[in-house]
Image (cartoon, rainbow, N blue to C red):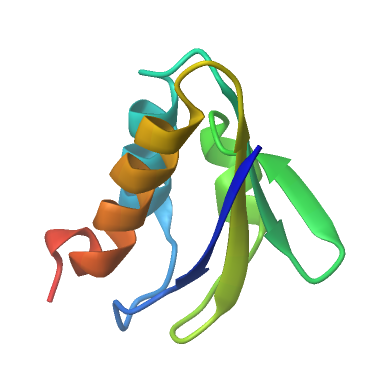
Length: 88
């Protein structure tokens, strides 16, 4: 299992476009990938699940991946957050 803390750095937070990018990226990997915020845990491969988290600017969440390509999956999703989903 690989875990990493993420912070939402784009001002608009996680809306439809970033949620789609997260899900598209997560679906490239065979690992089980979840995002956790407070008590909410969602499948990162689900656009609707990611949107329903309601993650706004500066929200911290935990990314957890478990599987054969978990390290690569975590790094790929982490880089989306670091690049602010190329919005700012």
